[in-house]
Image (cartoon, rainbow, N blue to C red; front, side):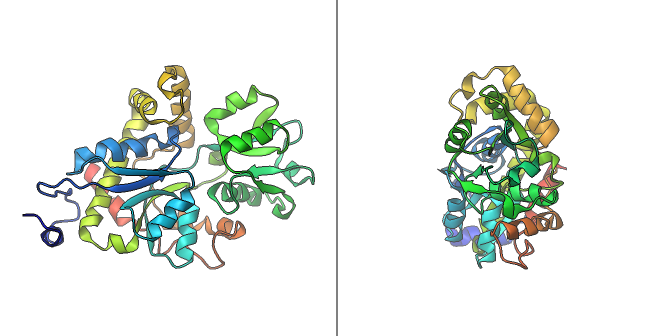
Length: 338
């Protein structure tokens, strides 16, 4: 009979690289993730909902989705889920406040957001400092706020002169832009064409052209949970699934198109024609390079984000990712794939 004690004891004698087996019991992982599933989220979703079950002895995951990713991090601090897809800034903020969390991989690389501007008013970054210009974001201190500040800092824009307001979700931001109450908002890159049809709206900032490195969403776990060797092998399996999904998404358009239609929560996704999905796939794989394999998890790169996070009020001066980044499980997953 398999008990928790015998399972853990067996785990201590099994190499880390071995895939998880629970005998006659299939483990159900508790996973929390972003409520939004755009094209950039597709490989990560396929990884844990399909590929993981082909790698180890897993039942379908117990998946919880949340609109606000900071709430995912709050739940993770309490130790509820096994592994989460969370936004990088909220994980950094929680760790800076003393939480024992670990970043074990990236859900995707870079970011697919652009900042669309009312081009009747804003045609340059310097225009954002005009007293009557307003930038709309979701929440101060979130990943989009940091993303914007980092670009402004890079180009020497006086951020104290930029009027940034919180507007909630994407629908509220778009309504405010169309009503000319704000002049710059973040949108998903694939929405830029449709937005341009509504008026003189143009992408002012394409972050993947501005940053050498940006981390938007990561796979993260509770540090106490990670002490169990059985759980460590679960992390390796999840990351192997992610790498396999990244490889398929990057190299096989048909695979991406099918999985996009299956998992995207765009209400019309199932009916998107191939040419529209191909444009999305080209943007994500060729320009943004969102699905790398091997997947980077470099401490020095993450620490380049700290000055931006400080300006956004996410972390205190002197913070770092030093205790957060745990790359050895990703290295093991990459070794499995050769």
